[in-house]
Length: 246
Image 1 (tube, rainbow, N blue to C red):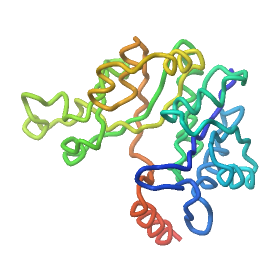
Image 2: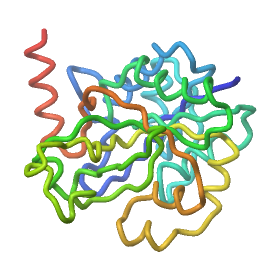
Image 3: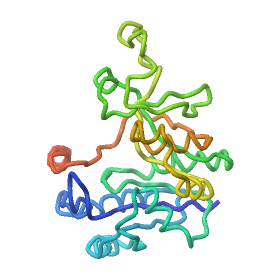
């Protein structure tokens, strides 16, 4: 089985333009992500998909293969699909470019889903949720079935619409979703070529398009999320954390 990891890294970002090139402990953030991804034992190839020559240069400096993609692509999934169209592979792992502390082990947890079940469409990650995360609309929740396959994703505190998790003393009704994915190559094509679903637009969550299309999404349970960077403030916090670890 050929499993390709792709790091989508565009220059433009509403909250943090040029984010992949932002310096963290003296190195561009994209280089941190690449070095972490290279420790995967299951990836047969690693690609950076970008629309920017400076990002391309930073990626190539640490030995990454780069595929240039259109700046107008609407999402990271579309950028990944464009990057792997001509590549012979079975599975594609979406490695977020704003996750500088991503580990090879985390990538392999996703990839292993397809090794165990080649018929799976997608896989993603989630961890136990706190009361604060449950109530935060920026925290995406996922409810699963007995097989740890996603039933639904939402920004609302589901399934606690009638009885509160705090009253029940049980927060296991959902998990906090981590936006890292793996897809079969065939399903990624189907996903990117399909129009947005109403539930996707209503919740502003692209993974709901996959559920609307009838996909099976395996949810891999992890203890906690890695530290992502969405804003310049996040980068400052992460820099302090890394300095303290030293």
